[in-house]
Length: 105
Image (cartoon, rainbow, N blue to C red; front, side, top):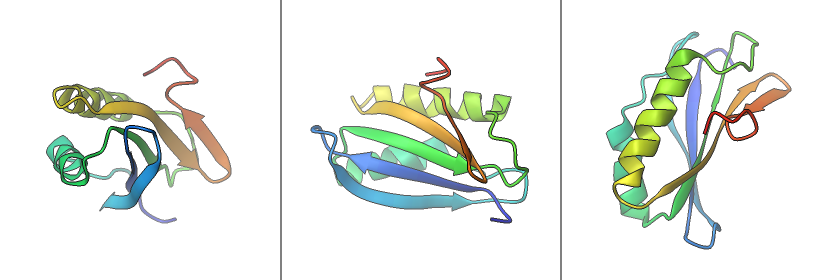
């Protein structure tokens, strides 16, 4: 993929998939993701939890400081409406990095 894509899996309270959405597309280096848009969709879908994922066209699956900041912002915002963030996965080619496995979430 030539640009960054940010996607969210919206899950119900039993962690069953409600909907998968590619929410934002960005440039080669980033995708602008307003946390309020994720919150708005979670409320609209009555989600109980989410899993976020985005790709790094650069080829490195290491989370950037921007990735970490965004994850914290979204987790904090969703926490106010009792929606859990289960993971944030960075995809680069055939490699992935899980925030949970890394202890970042």
